[in-house]
Amino acid sequence: MIVVTGATGTLNGATVDHLLKRIPPHQIGVSVRDPARAAHLANRGVRVRQASYDDPAALRHSFADAEQVLLVSSSDLTADVVAQHHRAIDAAVDAGAQRILYTSAQGTAFDTPYPPLAIHAATEQHLEASGVAWTALRNGFYGDPTQLLGAWQETGVIAMPADGPFSWIDRRDAAEAAAAIITAEEPHEGPIDLTLPEPVTLADFAASASEITGRQIDRVVVDDETWVSDATASGTPEAVARFTLSMFQATRSGHFSSSDPSLSRLLEREPRSITDQLKGLVVAGHDVVDTGSGMKERAPDRHDGWCQSSRHAGRGPFHAPP
Image (cartoon, rainbow, N blue to C red; front, side, top):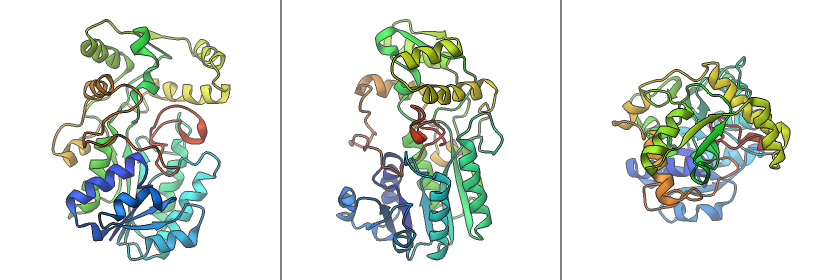
């Protein structure tokens, strides 16, 4: 059995959808905070059990009989996230899981220019020390591009601090790749980077947006302190603005400039490009994006993952590895 946490959230909910295309439903279990939100999975034959990362006993029960457990990184705004991850890992080990998978982030390390990566590093360190086989899905940044680009559709301008190359993947691709890794005949050991074939910049987003809309979308670089001042004047807490700024500073240091072919290999096609993602945004509107399966994106679960962004602890708008 494969047990997936956060399965009522967007990322791992989509992963479960892909698993259901690959294996029978009775081989899938989900661990969710609110089982009522997973009724659609129970109706399809998926085992649904209640647990949270704060309840080790419930976690052990929800992980029972699992050969593999997929843990989504926590986005609990009030919690000690590293402690939550440790509890989930320990519960999976106690339940007898043979492999633990975790939604991590590209560039994960303790000493990096982007603070959330240290949380992923601490989680991966605990996985390595667990004595159980493990895989870290190091996703590139992902999420609603509107949160990254600002009000470009209204203003015709992407006005953000200076940036450097980074990978902005489609969350649907991250979910599909996760399902492929979980069900692969040959397991992947340790971390695997899931990125675009080539990194992008906000200038690339502006060029793609111009192409899609047929009007000029300009990339305007805003001074760091001016951007923070403007953000706080608009109601963003200064700590949140500065944390978000650290993402841009990290990209321009080159920390996220690497790319890897693994995502393309797992998908057996090219990942959705930023142009593809922006087309979906323009067609569907920036509030709701069609997932491509006829379903709209789910509201996020508290264990729906951060990806690389500063979404964790309310620190910023992007989903990214945390």
